[in-house]
Image 1 (cartoon, rainbow, N blue to C red):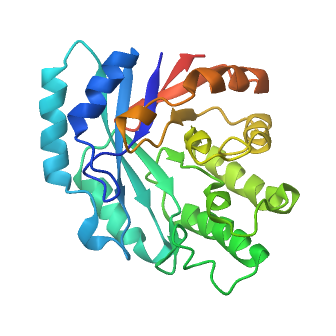
Image 2 (image 1 turned 90 degrees about the vertical axis):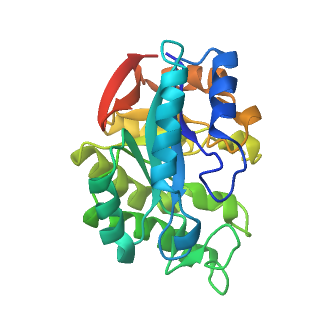
Length: 261
């Protein structure tokens, strides 16, 4: 089973790729399944979020056009903050998602990618605030499938690598909560695109998740253009096996489906 479960197209504010271009690229790569996961981030991107109605009508058209060739799932990436939980709950109850990525892209409406949140803070302050915000949201919002790019803040750390020993205690709390709630995590291969020295989440975090009994694991490229679709998948699968994972997950109407690695 080859499935990319983190894809962005022109329904996300940071991609211009037509949805059908991703489908065609997936077919060329021999993928069995893809899941589109467009951005929704209330508080900072309200006017630029995914147009749900057009998204679902386009997705249904492509499902019909490529029936029997590839499975296309309806996903979304929710950038939830503690103050925006209600809006995401309403969206989830309104639309028939197969898969939801729970991500942290901003705190107090200040984004990480432009370093607005990090400004004026020490490395320890913004690193710990990032993980603390994830843990807080997990206590308030449960309608998701996996935690997205769990240690993503390392992509936007102007100070360089932060000691992983410092974050592991709170990461363990996050992972234990996810497992208790029946949720999973994703392996996000955009770490290669961004030139990071480790996987995302890191190998130590993946090992910790496995050792804690975590079993729900999806793989996504976080691709915004066709050339990054399924990026480095063949390289990371053996790593997952080395850690001890034996299955990866796809999803249908929010239910995980396990496939042998």
